[in-house]
Image 1 (tube, rainbow, N blue to C red):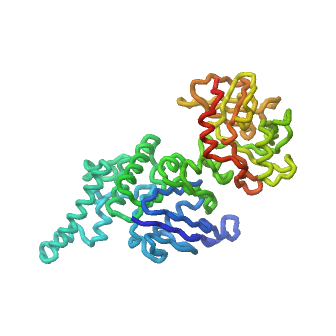
Image 2 (image 1 turned 120 degrees about the horizontal axis):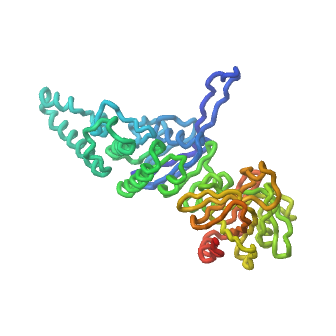
Length: 445
């Protein structure tokens, strides 16, 4: 078991000659000043879009790439100059990387044979030529056999030990790759998008398998993925990366409910968070304020909430500064009545619009809303003017229906326009979540 620590790691890829247009290509910073502390036995997920630097970070931990600057520590030891085989880690790759001419047993045992400097051929020769060394060779072979069969039992692939990789399904190949890593009994496991080549059902099965293995083996795991479902279901903590920098690190629930910035808010969630940009204006009476958005939406909010957000944004005179307001699709409560909301103090936001499109998902339904008013066909279908609500599959909405939606104030997120950072406006998420569970009314009708 081992603690893994990254201290201000940077990775810069040098210019690689001229591009197709004849211009000199520029150097590329793939990882920019990343610092992470992964405690012993933790399951940390590195999450982000393609090109964000997550796989490069993992390869530097493994020793396959060297950092341009910074330090990597495994078990308290700086390993920058240490060869990959001497770092006491095991890596599982996206493409399985199995030897096609070796059966499952041989694939799983090969790394141990190299480490113990033994093989079946060496063992046979030692019995004939060096009888004194045969006993040690036999002990090594017995240890390899024990580890391979133990891992095969753990993964449920004991019946496959005699098969070649081409005779296995994708899920079985991935189990073999896992087994090859397990037999090493490493201080830390590194996973580089191991499930991306599997179909949806197999991904679900392997997620549960990896989770169970971590609970059984109690080993430090660093897992790279672009799949947010994998990140939220597997990780003890999630580190979200973008453009080589860490945007947020924390437990999955915290990262999802309290995003540090607009990027994290929009990257996590399926469908992603609704984010609208606008300014606060006076409402119909002194208790109300209106959020006038650029995409045509006019949202009603309590005046005290608008004042708190404006103050935190540095807007001395409310309505002078643009703000991004976000809320998740599943937090919108739709109501097809007259739209009156006597408890607006409890509900932080009210919106009225028309249903543009309904998407049944089987267990749920996505309802796309557009603001009230006359729109040309092109405007009606513009994605940026639509808000998405995720509601139950039993609701019976039709395109063109007038609808009113409500969002609880503790589920509203506000971000600065200039840098996308979250605005802290005095709402306590823990208390807000507790109140939200008690106040989820009106129900969809």
